[in-house]
Image (cartoon, rainbow, N blue to C red):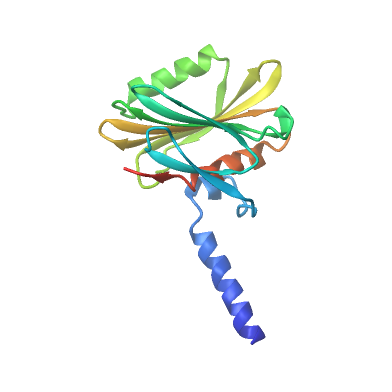
Length: 185
């Protein structure tokens, strides 16, 4: 009986490791901690996001996009993260013009890319980066991921990480939340 239980545990661990995304592997993210989650849909019902139940969440929409803003407000700003996920209508191509626009936005905000890549997200073309700088007097990191969903829609998520502690852990939390996104189209 004990051997069967050990075999089951090993199989479950092996299976869960194979489901890790490329980003999760890149940042050596541990398995997600057991937390209670609430499933939140964006206002236009384009996607669902599982968010820890203790986080404060707001929805926003206009004619072209629908957004979810969420953060763990039970922690100090330098120990938490702010997450914004949006589904937008518009064309998106990962070409030189796109990268110039990203560079321009980062330059305007005094941020420098410290890591980036093009690993697919949910089998869709994607560009992501981690940038670093100073914002509101705090050391600041931003994780940003943009994925093309169709010819005229795209998904963007970014997390704002203030302070210098547990940066990788908070990036992993962002990636963990990303891995749970469900698109409703």
